[in-house]
Amino acid sequence: MTDGIRDTALPNDIEALKVLIAVRDATIERLTRHAELLQEQLNLAIARRYSARSEKGPSPQMGLFDEAEVEAEREALAAEEVPEVESVVAGHIRKARGYRKPLPAALPRVDIIHELPEEAR
Image 1: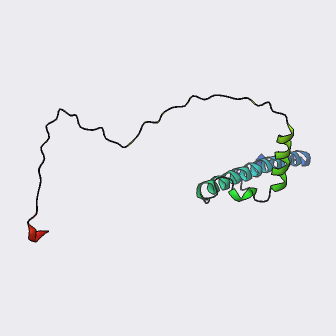
Image 2: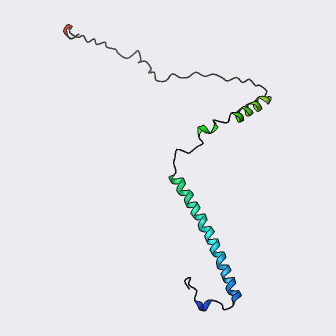
């Protein structure tokens, strides 16, 4: 035989042979299901690795035709009575960015005036 069992190792009883075949059939079925599962996992991994990257999230066009659901949700929210609560938020002053501080007045200053000759003007 091709699976490593010699003919002398097989029982001569027909019922024992049927049981042996049933056990082998169950093993084959179990291994086949396991191989199919592994193949499916491999296919998913390959698809995840090499699929298009532009389809990562939900498309913004998915909600184009949901006006009825949006309107029903808006009406449900309007029907709910929500007590209005006023809250006071303290303001803040933003620091101006991008401006240099003026140079200190104690620094010496020298005015240099460059004049062009009349023909170069």
